[in-house]
Image 1 (cartoon, rainbow, N blue to C red):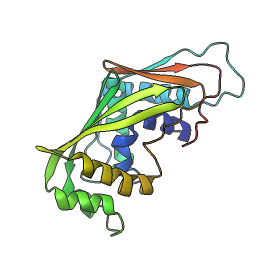
Image 2: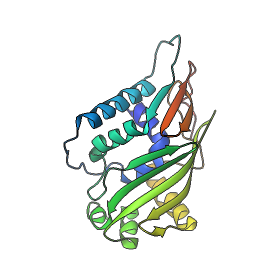
Image 3: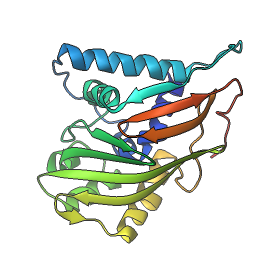
Image 4: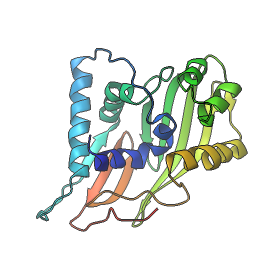
Amino acid sequence: MPPSARATLASILVVFLLPWASASPGTSPTFDAATLAASKSAEAKLAILGNKDPQPSATYPAVVITEYEINSYLKVHSGETLPKGVHPPTLKVQPEHATASADVDFNELSRSYPNPNDMGPKILAAMFHGTQRATITAQVQSDSSGVRMQIESVSVGSTTMPKWLIDYVVQNILQPEYKFDLTKPLAYPDHVTKVVLGSGQATFLRGPGKTGNSKQ
């Protein structure tokens, strides 16, 4: 997938996927026809969103990506980036909110990062053991400057992480390592003017102007 399309996907999923990015590839399981079709549909829509048109079009129809499409895409492609121990996440979309969940084997996750300088997985593995369900909920707001995300809650198994710990992990581990800043809006790709989260879908409103140049 082109880098610009990855940025489009990240505008909603950045909080959920960045901790596992650039990890060792996993295995490639077999998927049913419906899942593959929905994944291809999501990929085609992401390609449209990531397209840098040298010639302006007469119209820029909105692009709607459903929960089923994006979850199928994650199911098919997350093995390309997720380390061993992290199962494909599922995303639930509601107005101005997104929730991602995944089963994580924290012991295996730690072993998949042999470099002692990879502190994020090491800290998580020290806090949690075995396979547990990890869930992150964030508020997502879209305005002229880009997409703004604020983490509202993080839970692992039956444990809800306190806000101070969430802030510490994000500010001192994730942001420096993965080069993002949640205090600033995430830039839109070209021609995207707004992202509207609805019940079970995300709508990308588009226009002729170049809007993907917000600085972070």
